[in-house]
Length: 113
Image 1 (tube, rainbow, N blue to C red):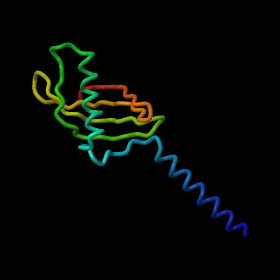
Image 2: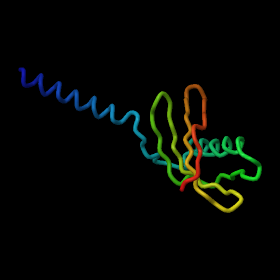
Image 3: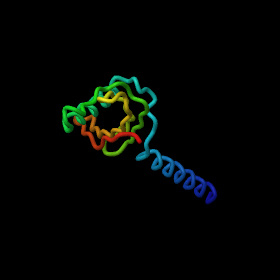
Image 4: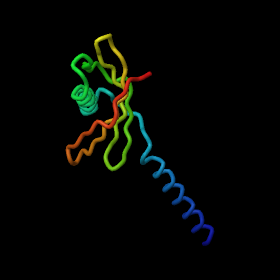
C-alpha cells in the first residue's frame, strides 16, 4: 500500500510541476488572423502613434509573429509590420489585457533590430 501512495504522490507532483511550467510562459498564438488578436495589434500601433511625432506615425500592415502569456490577465507579445516614412519595418509590441475588465495597456513598443 505504501508503494501505491508513493507513486500517487509522485504522479501528483509531476502534474503540478507541469501545470506550473505552463502558466507564466509565452505560448505561440495559433491564429494570427483572429479578429481579437488583430484588434490588439492595431491598438498597439494606435497607442504608439499617440506618443510619437506626426512625422513618425506608423500604419499597421500585419502581424508577423505572436505569443501570449497567462498572468493576472494576458500579455500579448506581437511582432508587427507597419509602414513608416521610409517603408515597412517590424516592431515588437507587448500589450497587457484584462479581458473581464475590458482593459488594454501598451507595455512596450520597439523596433526589431
